[in-house]
Length: 386
Ligand code: NZQ
Ligand code: ZN
Image (cartoon, rainbow, N blue to C red; front, side, top):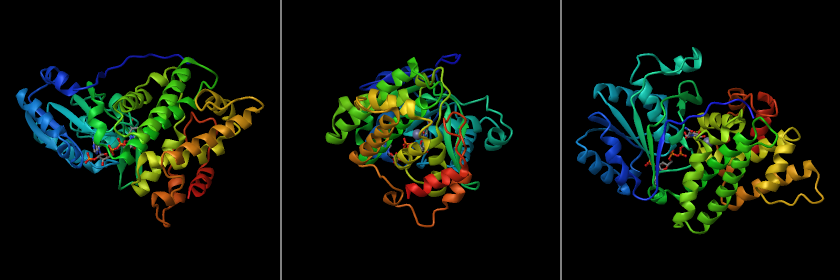
């Protein structure tokens, strides 16, 4: 285990009626002007908007609405939010939605406090923002775990880069699984796979020998696989949904990363795919993972073999390490098919003219991956995903 410091700033309110039970106390601590940020309108359709507006009114807040945050939020949208926050002297941001809304608001909270171009500050000058509008999150779509970290994934359309920016942590996160019951099944599945991917990407980093963080991680992976299977059979299963909502938060709340340097090569490749195609994040990962993992053999064989036995219940009897590692990748690919995720880019509707060369060349090569990929090999991976 590497040396580490662990502390966590986000207070989580999990469970039934978590907003009604806890928002009044949290709102009592904030200033008067509250920005209510959300996406394309699902929260209005399914009653969450009315409920939150009622709680905000009861708390005597002036509400400034920041709406239309799109999936794969853009840097331009961040600037719109920051302008709105400044113009209205926003004291607190309440982000209501999935990863896209939560990520967009993290950067709005920082951009509203500075005239500096945050993209330049963070990606060119390697600085980090230090002043933020405080925020809370109400999760309506689970998967990314964005409610429990301070990383935001933002698309810079001009530069054709989808990349990480650092923002604020949420002071609190409301996780009521009932709010997620109206998510389209396609999003439930892709969000759950995203959560599984976060676990795998963390697991595949170093140290690579057995350690406590990875053993907790294996439990999370088993939990996601079991509960996603239950959810595809019965989308109304609130017990399975509750497990998935918390497992997804666990994937990105830092606990599995304690003492580890993570991998996240699949994510870096998928993010650039997203920059060029605006595709669904979890679906892109589902196509990339098995192909990328076949390229990671044999360097990854010891870890893949452990996943085969400890997560996928594959018997080690009579199998070599490399055979077990291959069996893990086969099991992962079969699961992706079983739950209805795409296995190729063409199944995702990716255009023939997609510039895979440019995607490969603009992808970050991560230091934590056991294989030292090159842009050329990532180009091969993308071609095999077609
Ligand atoms: O916009 P509305 O109308 O609200 O519809 C949304 C959106 O279309 C809908 N939705 C959300 N809650 C719903 C609902 N529909 C019905 N009922 C509800 N209760 O779901 C759609 C997808 O939402 P989105 O937020 O885009 O999805 P997701 O949570 O998967 O977030 C994806 C974004 O997060 C980034 C991804 O790259 C992508 O940009 N990620 C963020 C991470 C982080 N900060 O830790 C980590 C991830 O690896 C990921 O990269
Ligand atoms: Zn992800």
